[in-house]
Length: 269
Image (cartoon, rainbow, N blue to C red; front, side, top):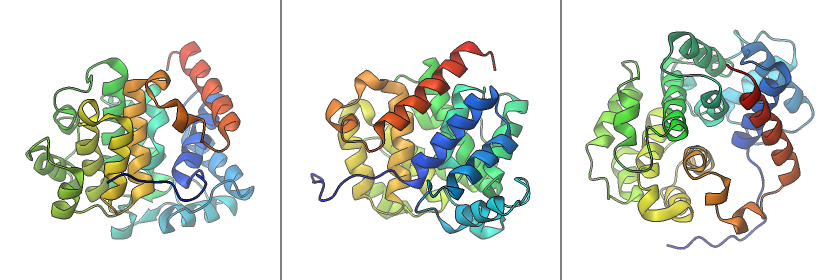
């Protein structure tokens, strides 16, 4: 199936919160949960975050009203959503997710919106995947899931990754989604995305995103996370220029990305 755009593109909350995270790290030259939470509040207060899910929206409202970052995140079963995994990517460029101190920071940043071990495990899985692409541990061949799962805590996210990793690696993503789910529940979403990204060398960037979107569920978040991992592997020159040219707010995104990359390059985290 070929997806044909029918309306102008717009930036989703996934990208907006990721950009706010980059901005906070650049401004403070470190990963600081309080600073990241302040950036979220700043962006939200200026109507620069739109379409947030219920858990993220709750946290943003309470942050904007003066709530402490460690207390505003939703708890309980409903907190196991994608809101932490979708914005965690910048931390992979600053921290080694295999390091215990780094993992604590990843958990704290996740808990700004989602105070859930499953949400944290999903965010950690994304961080591990991006780090593997960044340091060359994963080059698009071999099992990305296998590299990630060995470093995850005992959670339902880990169990699902093991289950999905046992499937035929050539299975269409839509068939995997029909079998196991593609909802906004982090146990459905992150494993599905890692399975899909594992096909990047075979299907290419555009087909990767089309396959994820066609699979349904939390499509903007799933495609965003897939783009973060695949983009790390391919680099900007490996992405279709016609897609880059259609991105709204491209100057803003480029400026934030440039400042973030300079911060990462100049400071030993």
